[in-house]
Image (tube, rainbow, N blue to C red; front, side):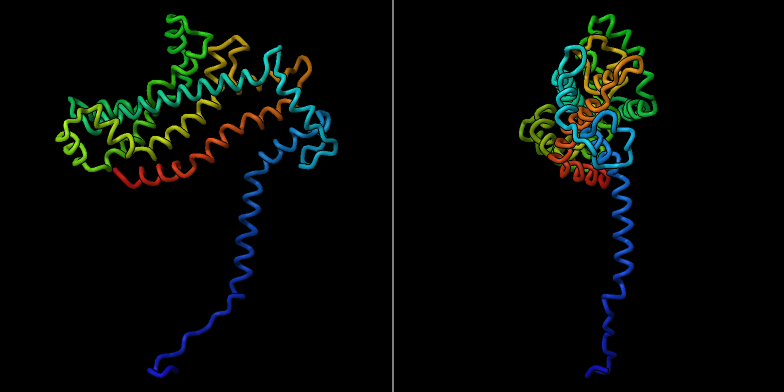
Length: 293
């Protein structure tokens, strides 16, 4: 008993919780290893000899190192077109589609949340309804339109479907805008700002987390898109990375699996770098958008 008659606090040994903590961390490490194993296998396969890739598939340590052979043969490309051409095509399409698409979504979200016009709720519901339409359904009408415009087999046809906004990004940014006080518009109007000036000078800086989150998702989706380039492009010099990687395997002739896995690793670098640089904005954008509205 203490001086005031209260029972003395019990001292619990930390060693009693040690087995549970060790088990918890062991399970987390095992699950983490299972999650990253495909990436480790890809990296290991890019360093193996072609004949060893599938004979020692479970091993992550090459018996015969073929790093230079795989990466050099893969970088040389296919049919006289170097892999740097495919990377450049993907970079152009991804950057243009991301910048213009997020800008369009930003303007649409601002219009739906800050500009009063007739049937605004109905049109917003129509935009949200497009989320239920599979992207593959839109390819045929897009192909007909692009062929009429004469842009089939050009990089413009790959960027155009992404350039005019996305329902998902419009919803994401609109939810962020709804959490901002309406007094911002009133103060801007008193200072003589119009709608465009208010969007650029006030809402654009404040919506940086939501815009950055949209840019990350958009860049990733455009970079890994395979179906649209397959339909719209038939010139190998204008192939994007996903379409080009398919050329390294040919069931009727020689398949360069070493070069395929090596260039798959290279193709992941821009996406991983982009994610690392903007990871903070991604987490902040998702968190703040989910709490507002």
